[in-house]
Amino acid sequence: MNTATELRNKLRSLDHKGYPAYKDLKGQYNFGDYVLSIDHVQGDPFASPSRLSVRVEKAKAGFPAKYYDTKAKRITLQDHLTRLFGRQVAGGSFQAKGSGKSGLLSVSRCGQQVLERTAMRVKDGDLTLRFEAGFPANGRTINARELEKMLFDILPDCVRRSLYYSKIDQEKLRQAICLCEDQQYIRRCLTEQNLCAFVADGSVLPRESGVSERPMKNAVAFRSPESLRITLNLPNRGPVSGMGIPQGITLFVGGGYHGKSTILQALQNGVYDHIAGDGRELVITDASAFKLRAEDGRSVTGVDISPFIKNLPNKKDTVHFSTEDASGSTSQAANLMEALESGSSLILIDEDTSATNFMVRDDLMAQVITPGEEPITPFISRVRGMYEDLGVSSIIVAGSSGAFFHRADTIIQMKEYIPIDITRKAKAAAAVYMDQGAGVAENTAAPDAADFPPFNRKRCPAPDMALRKEDRIKMKAMGTSELSLCKENVELRYLEQLKDQEQSMALAHLLKYAELKMMDGRKDLRQIGDLLEEQLDRSGLESLFERGDVSSQLARPRKQEIMACINRYRKLKI
Ligand code: ADP
Ligand code: MG
Image (cartoon, rainbow, N blue to C red; front, side, top):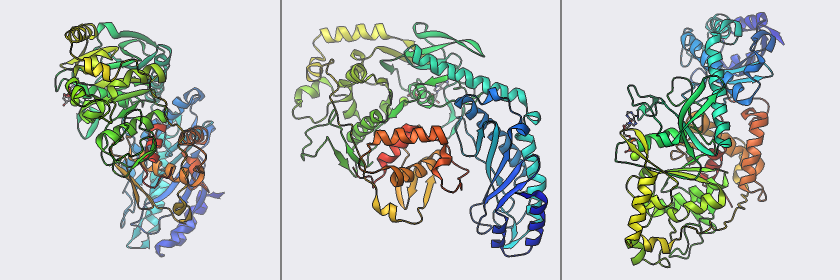
């Protein structure tokens, strides 16, 4: 390994040369307290900035082992340190001057969720931080003095103030780790107490605006209905009360604008842990939960949607259903079957974003259009079977239809943002309604007790040979709405639980990896999902890269989104 002095000398020898000469700097340099590694040098001052990493050894970093002895705590520590470093470099960025991205210093921007990122890796106490730097130039001529300032003045300060335990605000870190332990404890309680979700009293569910993930100011704080209130004794915070949503079928009803969609959104985000001050840090949902919605126009490849849709007019196969352009109902059916395939044990549905004909069919319609003529068995007729036979719970927002009253185990009315348990009242009203002879047609057409029909679980994708022949596979992510792999776009905008552009970028890498290394026509998608999950658990996103040239801007998506992304790839062959 080279010394820092050698780097300084090399750098000075490059001054005023053409920009490509910067490539000579690639390598590792010992700065005493840490090792700086120049992993990739940009081609010119306007291109994507250069990739650097800093490694601090355990003995020098000095973080207590109990802060990274579980996966969840390690991720929290990594997240916390990335944020600290981010605050430092924000001040140091563009202090060095020049053309294009000269002087830029940046690291992943962490949002409200705590995510595992390639930006920071703690392994057995050693830290690796990955970030970007714009190597300075005047025009396209190297300005070595400015890079010297960045690497020898600005960066060492940023590193020292964020990656050494003795230098940081230890109390803040302790609090982040304590919150993580409490969140993990709630997650364990969900399993032990057969709950789908927990929403702590006092939580702030609404966001500041449609484009901001920050908490709304002066919002009505969450308060659990008495009948659903449980108290959990968190290891750090002590007793915390809140609403425990039992497994089974839960319905949210209520007038428009009373907070139904808001609570559902908080629940769908509860698959992730949130930072202190978010308002949802003690809103914890079954981590496999999938937000199910209609998605007109998506492509579907070989999905068995026959539990919901059969006998299409054009005799189209619904056991291996494929389309380039799904309708509202077929897309929602495919989304559900794929969610089951990905192992989700909780499905979240909002009527606002559902296809009505997928969800329900009213009595009069069922009398006029007989079951033989109607290809769709609506979700309402399958929701109980899905729970009884497959163990998959549902939480459904349905403000405009009482039809689900018969099927639900728990019925909650949102009234001015406060939930009220109306299970008994609604069940009584539903019983009276049935006695009056209404609802009969719907019930005979689709009996409550119907088993969830068996379905094809073996979808074995064949590799995309054209992709294997490419020698340079280009990837791009547009926020959380789209990615492209070799110019083929994959729509992600309806995957509402995808939260970060870095997750989209990771999806592009994972899709490529699955296509090149895993799909062989024999492994089914579930096995591929499990294998990827195991690999990410064992070796991280870093393992998707050969030769160690790891992207510094990836965040780990859930298995649900990985499989959903593969399923939306229009070149998927099954
Ligand atoms: P619904 O789905 O019942 O029609 P929404 O969940 O869309 O209602 O909420 C309607 C509005 O009320 C939204 O603008 C939302 O931000 C706001 N809101 C939701 N919950 C609260 C709350 N607890 N305190 C204050 N405002 C809230
Ligand atoms: Mg709504």
